[in-house]
Image (cartoon, rainbow, N blue to C red; front, side, top):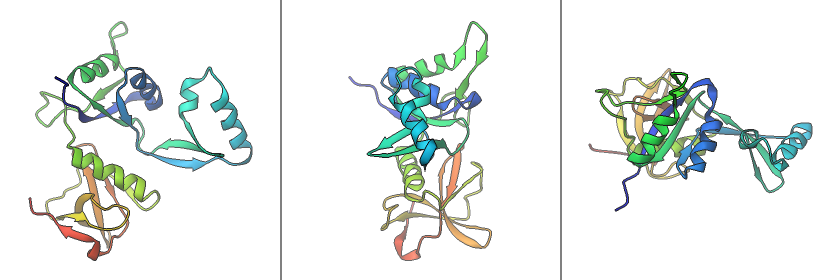
Length: 204
């Protein structure tokens, strides 16, 4: 029987998310780094192309992605944060790799649940909504504190537009009413204004 996969948040010290991404790929563990992509032009494009064509600097190559003739630099949106999709055995493997027993030094940690007696499982719906917010609104959102209060906001689902299917909370932030998409205890993203006609209230 195959073990069930869940999403977990990982804090990687020293901003070494690409190093961990490379390691996880070797173990066939899916990962996700919230990122923006910056088109490389002129000399930057030439340097990136040479790096991608090389065969030595694996980690350096991970910082770029090529789509046809276009090359983009991957810029993590939140320093040291990434997500993994793993079963219990894979999770234990990642936890082990995040601690150097010889040096007795941690290289990061997997987020724990509120009681601290296990790792915090991220519901698939939260992860899907978060990824939709990142990709659909590449420059129209802002990162907020993970513990922002949500008790006064209505939970809604987006029914049309590029974020269709995503769920979040309608919150007044400053002078604007925004859609707040969050992974509880880890990160919150406030998107740009979404017309009310594109939203439906979710009854929990």
